[in-house]
Length: 139
Ligand code: IDP
Image 1 (cartoon, helix red, strand yellow):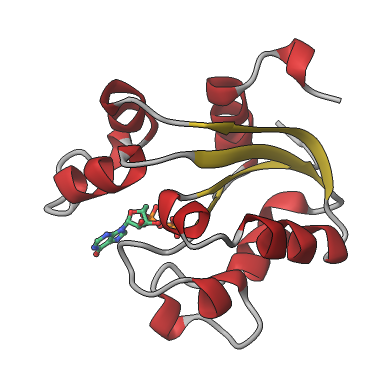
Image 2 (tube, rainbow, N blue to C red):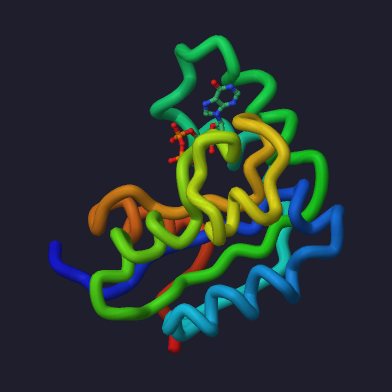
């Protein structure tokens, strides 16, 4: 399904460190329009479902613990080529490998606590957006 939307979460580490404003500023300055947004907290069941693709990986328990330990900011973003452009903006999964100026390089400390999520395909953007928001929440 073609779309010009992607889905993001500012993860618990980014919220704990007070980086919500700075990260949203960077997202807006990079040309993304916020279509839906909320501060929320994932339950264990939420995180297990959202990251189900990783449930056989050794880091899965740590990932679920991390993603549920505090609030996140969930948002749907709109821009031409949104999925690929947002993945470029956030940088590599491991901040040590992320390019200068990317959100993970600027705000993340480790591969496990990497500040921000970005959908990796148009299909997943639609699935992940629908996981957190109803159609009525989106502008
Ligand atoms: P992505 O978030 O860049 O798409 P994925 O491979 O889909 O990366 O991994 C999902 C999340 O799982 C990562 O953002 C990170 O929080 C965590 N993660 C990925 N690989 C590792 C690892 O090797 N150790 C610990 N946590 C990891």
